[in-house]
Length: 118
Image 1 (tube, rainbow, N blue to C red):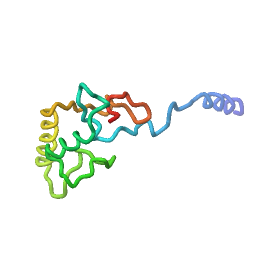
Image 2: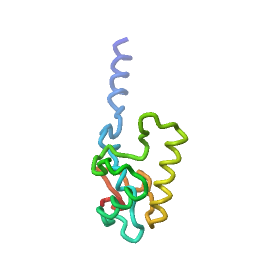
Image 3: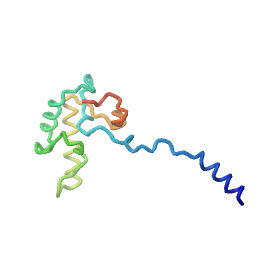
Image 4: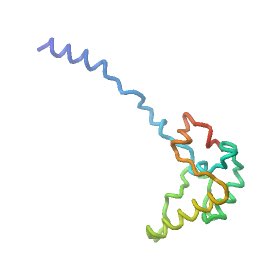
């Protein structure tokens, strides 16, 4: 019995969970997903905010808040209204020449790709 326990201990010490750092999953703020393709990573921050507000984002919303996203619904908003509002903003921003990158394209804050730095 002691030999089996010793063997199990030896086997278990070799088990290592790789990279348990939760900061690997902290991604760039939503606003940075909107980039001008010819200036990705250097998009004019103030113009992007102006364009987002012009495209239908509530002007009372603080776009500098890292928790802001187009995925939040307003109180009393139906899923159809939410989808219509979100699609309107996305379509409008694309019409203004922005590319909407995904979080994987931008990379986590810990190891950004450079596409979504500004």
